[in-house]
Picture 1: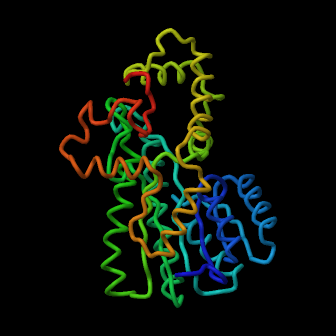
Picture 2 (picture 1 turned 120 degrees about the vertical axis):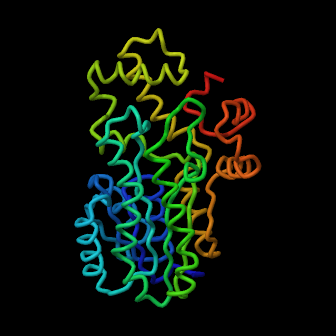
Length: 323
């Protein structure tokens, strides 16, 4: 697909971050876009920005929780109705949240919600829009996994099970589709996107979706979170709970503002990869470096000293002070 002009794209999680940037860059490329999100105010901002970039393409917004099958099917029906078509050319399964760190300790409902959004969101949307993709003359399915789709960790001593399990599932599904498409739908392509640390609002949005914004946590919840951080090696023993709350909020801001790769640059890398029909798209220098490191020595991938010292690496370490 050398050009996105006059194509129809569907983007999940289009309200912020990489999803928003995909919508904006596709609009600039004269592509019609339908997006979904669970936070309408975010989509409204994306709509306004897209209209200012290119008022001549059709952009539609849809409230949809991609972890709920009925909502996804309604989303599909509304997209095809509003775009007045029975086909689409591009499906970006981009929506995701964090959380559910420990299979042992984390709340079961939170764990399953994270897994459902990050895995079933990809599955349900792929199922729902598959016929519309097949109906196109050329179509491309783009599934966002993560570096945590090949390295199930945030560093030694930091559980990261739900998100990682879901992202491994997305990776396996996407790779399996390479042969499936080749045999059964040769006019379709698939790309697997594996970002590293991208400057997005995923941390803030996760808190909103899971009902765990740091601003709203009570003292018991804060204390449990603080104990988890200390167990992982964070030097926060002397922080009061209110100072700890402020540290969490600051950390969310830092995650977005101090990333190696901006959401805008990430979206460009993804779209360039789609144009080149790359089935495997690593996003960010940290993703490329970590991919090499895991491939070179997979048996040591979960050793305590697997990551280099902080001053020598660009990997996302949630507690750099412990090194």
